[in-house]
Length: 381
Image (cartoon, rainbow, N blue to C red; front, top):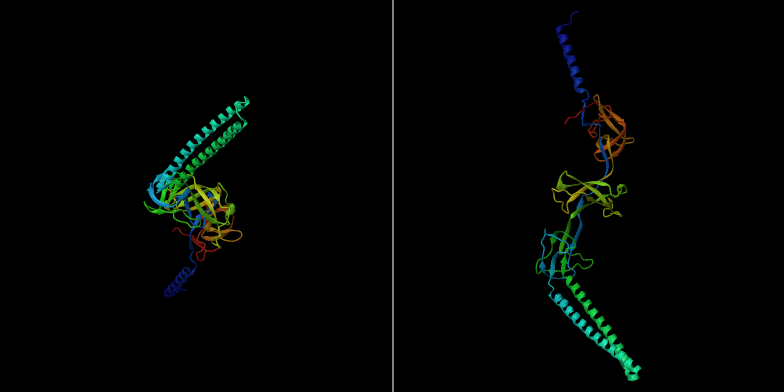
């Protein structure tokens, strides 16, 4: 029996419509980002919770020991100074005069001491002569007694004069110490970071409990370290001598090698909900092509442990749960796989077992429809 052409065309159109509907209505493969399981380095690190700060190993905020008017300002901001170099000096003509007066008084006291001791020597010689005369019955006992008493008194006067001379010499030291309190010298070599005050202005030392700006802020730029807070939970992992990486906003992606030199023995509770422990990392070799400045913001990563040439995957690919698992893309379908992990950080996690090199793990875990059994294709973008 022959099928009419019109009926045949109708059947063909109906079949095409059904096929098109099926193609359009079936689930489309989900585009997911994937990463191959590879071998490489994985480190366990502890990072700072807030930005750290570059600090000089030595920094002195200096002020004269006494207040007064600036007479000599020997340095300016940015100057390099040597240890012992004069930074500033207050008006001190009165104290210089006191030093001179003390020196002259000491000279006079020494001269008086010499004269008194010479007289004592003379009295002792006279007493010795009276003893010889008394042995020959050529002098009275009373005369001998007076001579001996005069000799003893003269020797006592000599010792008193010498003590007075020593007191006068000590007064020179007192006057010189008062004079030195008006002079400010560098305790170490470094860079003058700040100078507060100008010629003829008055400066005062800081009273106890009342901070005032230092006259000179001196920084030793030969050595720097990073002070940064870490979470109290991580403090137990950190040990002195551990290697660390330091990055600074001012240096871009350049990382500097460092070493943990100090871990604070107490917890800072300034923020009740985020208590931290201060850690200090000293920079092993400051960059030769860039100046490291105190005050730069810095981040540190303290390397707790490291495994080289191990299987690793991006940490973002791991699904939460016990045991840990990942989604794999194989033959256009997503499949869940449990795995055992080792060291981990924010970027990479070590795979101890459960995966092989070259398998593709899914990174787009938050994308809608990404689950085991779903059809998927790798997103090359």
